[in-house]
Length: 156
Image (cartoon, rainbow, N blue to C red):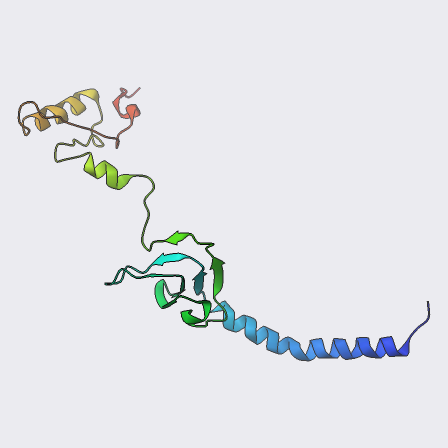
């Protein structure tokens, strides 16, 4: 293999260019590290504003909409934002409780009896008896979750 002075010279120039540009790359990285913004594009995004607007792109900064739009350029132009292409999916802001707590509230229409503090079967029965005195005849008393069957075993 022959040594080429031309190839060595080009390599030296390329290396020098990389070294010279390194501080600029570091500055760009530092600027983006403090960003934390999120851009959502190509979706059906409910803004929950007074007009019930649905847009296709948003920029979220510090947990709030910083910009909304219908094209990528409409959303604030934050170069450091992490971008997620929604591929037409729907986004609704807020907390989605997939554990169905809100449904359980609907199943407890004022007659639910919590048994978390009952430490024996006798205490559970006393709690249910007290609750029965508060409801009209024929109404249901419910107790949905919030207790463990281990509460009702006698201590060894």
